[in-house]
Image 1: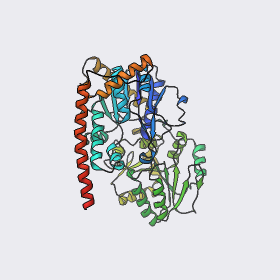
Image 2: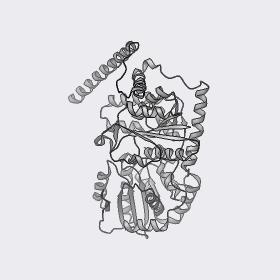
Image 3: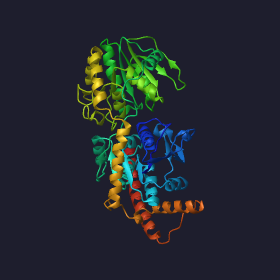
Image 4: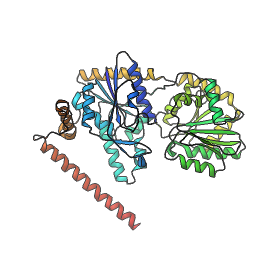
Length: 475
C-alpha cells in the first residue's frame, strides 16, 4: 500500500501534529507491506534529504508574525502535485484542513485515490485568535468545514475532537483514531536524567512539576502560574519546569517574575540565566528537539501538569505515561479521556484553587505519584506501531468501500473548477514539463457562475463589515 501523508507542518517544526505525521511516516516506511511519501510546505534548511522516504516540499510564505512561527504553503503547486501523482498513492491522508487539504483534493483528481482527513486541533480557536473580525472568522471556519466535508473518510483523535468538529457545522461521519507515542515504555537512563538535573540545577529535596508543549496561554498556562503563586504563599518547596516555545512565552516569563518567583530561563542559544536560589522556583527550559532528553524530563519530574482544554488528544500526556509519569488534567477535557481519577492520573476542575488542592497533596505524596504513574504506563500508553496498525486497517476498509462503490459522492467537478483545472495542469506538466494552465471552453459557464456566486457572497460580507466598522466608530 502506498500512502501519501500531507500536513502544513513537519520537522524541523515542533508541534504535536508534525510529530504525528513523522511517526506515521516512520512506521509506514518500516513496514514491509507499505511505502510512504510526505508533502509539506518548505522550510529553509530543513534537511529533508536525511529522511529515508521522499519529502515533497512545496513553495511557502513566511507568516511567522501571525502564526507563531509557521509558514503558509502555496495551495496549487503544479510541479509538486505532479511528483505526488507519479508516486501513485493508494491512499491520501491529510492532517490539516487548510492548504494540505486543498492539495489532497487536487491529488485525488489526478490519482483517484481516496482522501482521508484527521482532525487534530480546535482550529476555530486559532482562527478566532488570529483573525480579528467575526465575519471573516465565520467565513474561514465555513471554508474549513467545506474542505473537511469533501474528504472520503474523516477521523478525529478523540471524542472531544469529533464533538468540536461537529460544533463547527460538519455533518458527516467521523470515527475516532487515537494517536500513539514514539517513546519506548519505560524510564530514561539514570545517567541522562542526572545530567539534565545538573544542567538545570534541579533539587532532589523538592517536588518537580512539569509542563511540555507550545507556550500558548490557551493551554492553561496562566492558570498554572496563578496556582503556583498561591502554592508559594503556603510555603511549599517546589520547582516548576516549562518545556516548549511559543508566542506567549515572553509574557509568561514576565508574569512569573512579577509574581516574585525565582525564574531561570534557557535562551535560544542554549545558555541558562539562573536567578537567586528560592524554595519556589520556575524554569523556562525552552523547546526540546532531542526526544531522549524529553524522555529524561518526563522521568525526572514527579507530576505532569496539563490543565489544557484546548488540546484534542494530549499526546504529551501519553508521552509522560510512557515514562511512568502521572498527569493532572481538567475533568471532561479531551486530554483526560481514558484517565481514571486517582488510578492512572488526577482530574481537577478548571480553577487555580482546585489545582492548588492537587499540588498541595502532591507535595506530600511523592510515593503515591509514582504508583499512579506506573498505572498510567500500563493503562493509557499506546505505541505508534500499534496506533498506525489501527490506521492501516481503516485504510484497507476505505479502499474496500471504494472498490464496492460505497464511498459517498462528492460535489460535482463543475462546482470545483479550480481542482479540475489544477489536475489537468498537473497532467500537462507530467507530459510536457510546462506550467501553463489549460483553458476550458466547456467549463467556462460553470466557472463564471461560481465566480458570480462568490462575488455575491463577498459583496454581502463587505456590506456586513462596513456596518460593523460604523457601529464600532459610533460606539
